[in-house]
Image (cartoon, rainbow, N blue to C red; front, side, top):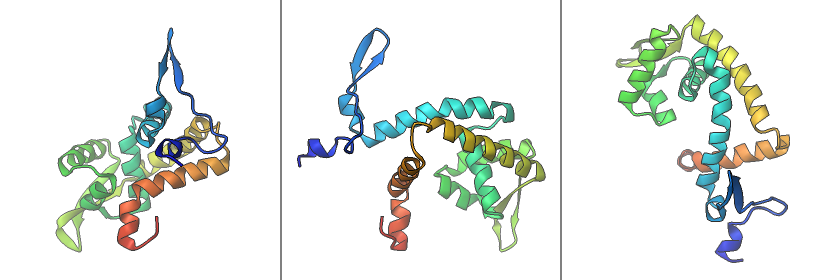
Length: 175
């Protein structure tokens, strides 16, 4: 098997080389063989659905991620949150200021370590993320409707294998 063969889609998968972009066909063959390009294009296909359905709640993807993590991890520190989402401390501070100004998040001194801050959802934050989670599940089902449940699960598993590889390696978990 050549390296060119390994870049081909799995048996039965269709890999268009030329995509209609208006009046001309644009050959994307080389790009369509790249994982990063396909991940980005899939994200760009899902993002408009997310923005449309969350517009009434004023949530961006990063806001949704923060609120989801805080719901699942009460008393998460600002440092843990930033590391989990790969957000630089100055950017996270601005994001948390915005969520706190909206009454969705509160910061308090960590009782175990007064130098750090613990983050928690307010009642309004819990209500909003519960409602937003329902919307997110529905929009993901719509965005991936061309996949079977098994394919969707496989896609998520393969993507996690890539982005969780460092964490799995640190734990000794095979990737």
